[in-house]
Length: 117
Length: 109
Image (cartoon, rainbow over the protein chains, first blue to last red):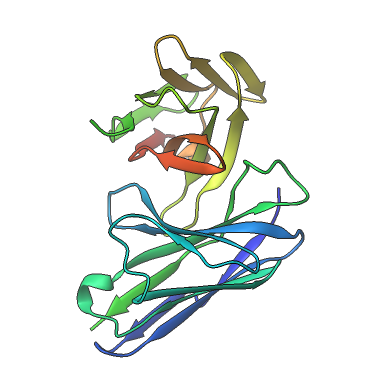
């Protein structure tokens, strides 16, 4: 299957700071990237969907000014958590879909564990 | 009612057992169904992907979809300790996926 990487794998930050998470598709061009959040013992909750070169579509209840998504190229999407607070601590996972595989197949990155102190 | 329901377990079986994991869904618009395996603190890994009702087999894994009853299953034959993980089912349409909560499976040697 296709390979998706995320960086960093783990980040600890102080409350009020901003954190940027990168998601890269390494061996295929991702026309669509998805950002999920997963709390302990919970399912993956879709936060937003982004198509390369377009504004992201956010799910209901997700603040677009707080979770900034940029999908500037077919291999890179970034999620910036602005003014992070302890309640933003979670496991953030991206996935990518697009060329090189079925459009509907999403390949997931390894996730980024964010801890806000 | 959540769109995809999945018993979180945990489910514990002896090595070599046949494992049956199940989900129900409520959204008739779902066009495709997937099973992912997620090891602790890792991203999900796609195991099986199917569009239609019926069975799809890949090695020790068989995915089964019954659209009439909105029921999806994953069977694991000859289970191994390395199969110990959380298994997530998902249904999707228009490129989006809705996930179940995941079932935590433990295969004991």
